Image 1 (spheres, rainbow, N blue to C red):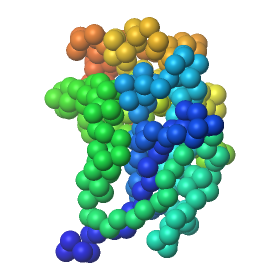
Image 2: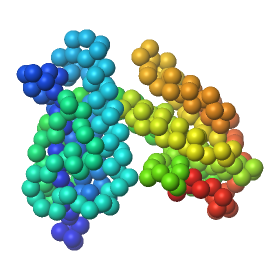
Image 3: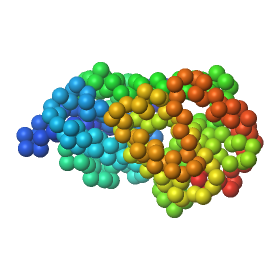
Image 4: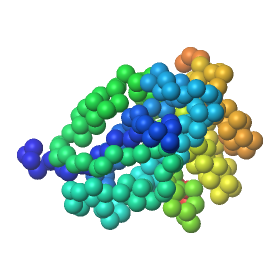
Length: 292
């Protein structure tokens, strides 16, 4: 049985080159996939991380942030087309830049691709992170965002909203003319039959993608849906938090509202609205072309 479930996976170690003259590198992440139904990707997304001690100026940190934001963008874009013809049919080194279909930032490098056969890619992925990057260096910023999303999900689940009134991970297609898909964390349908979406605030490395997705949805659709941005207070108030101006720009559209969460009571209005919504089993979305 185990042999039948095992699949071939490719992986590569992601490095950053702070000085293109010396060409010295530091490992910052791992990418792993099988080009059919899985593409895992994780990097150090905080330029102040102690492993990145070589940054001497804020400009160097900004260059790093811009580089990894763009890398995250092209990897996430590739996830939308995982059923493309595989470039990894043979176990040999493959040009990952060709696979991702976009040029890489000049200070980002991939190692030669390697292959593994397993029924549990998560274990291999975590072992690669531990070996080549160091898990301690990656936990610094991921934990806060993940635990916040988990707590929100747990709270909604305790209220018996998920899969009754709230649909999780709803696929969105902003325009039938664009090859763009993304997910809303949650969605519900009020009595007025206009969709209401809930998005948890993005991680630092995903801000540009998050902004692009929402701008496209808003600009390509005139429907009176609403988008509720749920954001942890301490993330919103951080001095160097870069998504504030993006959020303010999105809120210039009256369909976008934000909820800054300090405790469970902060979600009371959203919970009330979701509780009064139409059951998922009674949804009619035929006139909502933006739902994939």
